[in-house]
Length: 184
Ligand code: NI
Image (tube, rainbow, N blue to C red; front, top):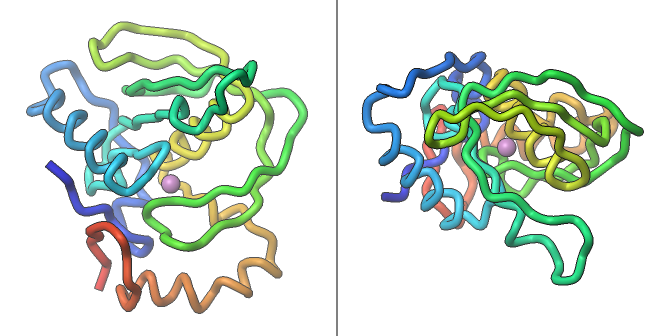
């Protein structure tokens, strides 16, 4: 089932997500619905707050964006109760976007690697280091479960330039290619 994606301005996007337990009601169905919602919107990541749940769950699929023959391998994974262990490596800029902030893109600087402790969809624990585009998408989604958005990092000039656009997303006066839930 495709769920509406919560738009910028929705309070849940600013909340720190709560950890969940394996008996969280309807979890496997929720994860299934989130994959469907993400692919329907052509996303490469989706976090639970973006569908209105303030919990520490996000999905990442970078397999679809890796060129064949590229040395970097994509990942397709659900991350539950993720905790950042460490971030490091040379910071780099990458253009980010977000399904909750349609048609807005901006260069964000983040460290090259992230070490994460998390549970997979079967509640098996992993501690893994991610780098490159995988790290980048994970860092963006991890921010969602900490109540942060990529627009928080944009430089003042860029923020001024997109201000009106952000206001119209908050007001819901935009056209979108997928179903959204606006704050007003
Ligand atoms: Ni996002």
